[in-house]
Image 1 (cartoon, rainbow, N blue to C red):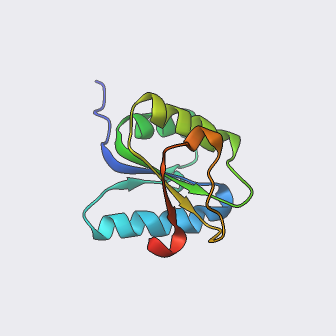
Image 2: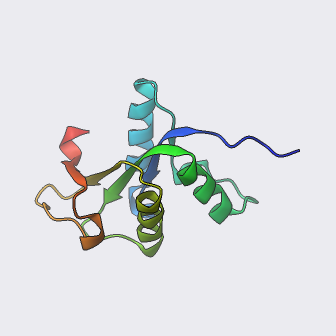
Length: 116
């Protein structure tokens, strides 16, 4: 019997170095009645790629945490999926002096971490 995929309100994409910030965003989403997916939900033994793609496919919105060092390759792939599936995308920059996003995020709403 096939399982019904879980629907998420928000998929949070972040580099490993910002995992605690991703969890904080998920916590804030939860406080407002939104269910958020972060990579912290991955457990050993799962096919990570399948779990991530299913969560992304079944999410309603996409939040990406953009570090000063730029996007990781896995984050870029997740962004591509969000774009292909026409998800609303919101970018959070961790460097308050950063006002530019990578070219693949042109037109995406940009928020400084202080607006979280």
